[in-house]
Image 1 (cartoon, rainbow, N blue to C red):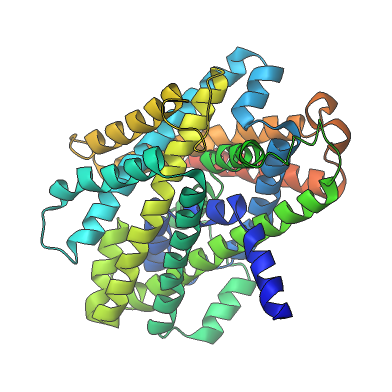
Image 2 (cartoon, rainbow, N blue to C red; image 1 turned 90 degrees about the horizontal axis):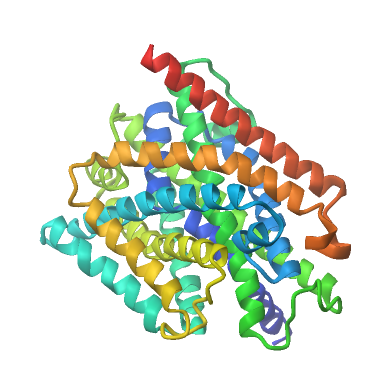
Length: 425
């Protein structure tokens, strides 16, 4: 009984961090990891160990800013920095998130098409409508519960990895010992993995969700106003964030292992979408593996799309000083929900436009990668401002790890820029 209570208490502490980590493995991310495994085999598995501390540090800093200030990142930017910094950051986030939303809606429809013989284009609008209805008319507690349950869908990829019957000694070796190469395809894939793992929309979402929790729970106040219980709250968000990021990286590793052990081993390296990866598994690993992989796409897409739309709506709403929050009813935060609906509508429209989905994902990754660097720099400055963080300014190892993460992202973008320049010449 005692162990059960302890387990339930621990599960109750999981929230924004777990949801953020799971949303990181959206259909776009699944496509990136599938391509990495299909083209390079196990060679990029070591990135899971590299990105885990970088992700955890950045997301913990975001959560801490939201908890201390009682605002999301856009709100902190609005209150403490020039509009010349706020508006470009929000606009770039909206563009990247909207493109990602569109491609993720299309990926869910393509995965469902593998089970139901209905044209993909016919399923795009209903998929988006289900998600919008949940966000508009579901209670905040219901939404959080649904999000938590949807994270379980990602365990499908752990199962798929075992069904793929990889060479586990090779997997362990490639995970522990980094493999470097100056090959152009390897470098581009490396940049793509880092870019899809450390994404700005996750920064905005987690900070806003910590602030949202304070609005929902009337016993809580921003720590800048009420210092009591700070250590307990920081312990909670640290555990939540670490579990969420570890979960995210476990799934990324599982997808790369699955693709490497099946597609790469069979010489099928031309994989461009998550749905293609699922279909390609059938003749190699069997229909069961294909079904598991496809169900994972549906589950993570249903989780990631609301997070993408929510991050957009929080950023725009906080930047404009609108009432924001999924805990508010639509009539109480009409502009916030209008942004949510508009994001979904544009995402639907992108699936009917003559835009190559792979090109859209590529340019979305470019925007996300470029945006991440200045946002992370601002994060580090916010974390040291006493008017934002009061007595909770971030220092010590956490501070320097934050700058290390920022430097890693900067060099990732630099490599991407060099690669694009060389490719155009």
